[in-house]
Image (tube, rainbow, N blue to C red; front, top):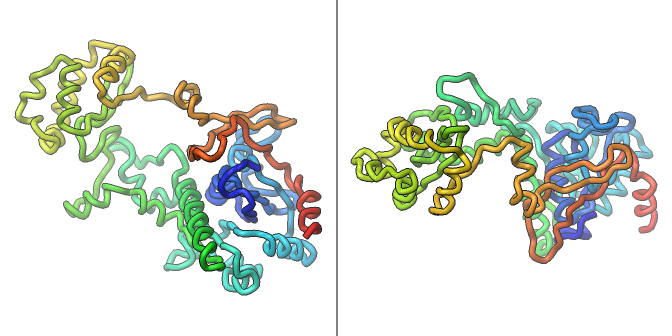
Length: 383
């Protein structure tokens, strides 16, 4: 277990695949003890999702390091007793079943709150525990599609495009972790747990940010714009001699500095580019003018000049380049997990840096299915 502000908090993790495990991974990184309850024989579905290293799922490993595993059949009386003993000692239960499943098992919120009033119950599901869609199944791409994010992603006139990371699941996991921390804080005063109901679709609506404002202001549904900002210009990816560079000149002062670096004072003097609103109206012409000049130099050369002038900019890295970026490494955002079967695996670090706690370069081991059974049972027996 990591040392952190949640040290001493016990989380029973009844989740699988991504949204729930991401939530409990965040809690584990913050110091909580996470006991993962898995289905006997098969375990978490993601144990069977590739890529595989020496027969082990790297996908599963990336989300479940630092946790413990116990296999329990919640329809078996003996295993139910163990599960209930866990709940009696736990601070938090996290589950991501479809609504109604926990009630069928006898472990819905009302039943658990009556028996374990201090227990915090966090549920992450596709559509939440209320509303007309509550019983529907969902995966990441389903809520990306329904929540509008795919309609503003990709190139104008292109086909629907999924965001490259599973933000439908990940945002639900993050919002659930935020809810858990808020509930833990409230419990210090009230002494009572609460239910946290997080829907993946809700989370997609929550991150639409200015797309909602643009629709509210114009009555027109926004569409995809490729690699540019919808309401700030120039704020996009521009072609240089050997590739693309992102330039984000978010105000008039930065635009003037950018034009100085480009050696294009005429752009500052052009009445079509006098304000951000005018630059947005004339975005295509400005992009052509900029790329005419940027084409005379390499990405690296322009980066050096723009950085010296204080103009926000960056290269477009692939995953390999991003993981080997010296700043990313200096921030400890690539950490190691040592496994006796797979060897050392590099995974994403914890982006929450806390002044009172160390940020170690490695994380706890990935649990084998039911690998923590004896230690967990001994802990329960110890009272």
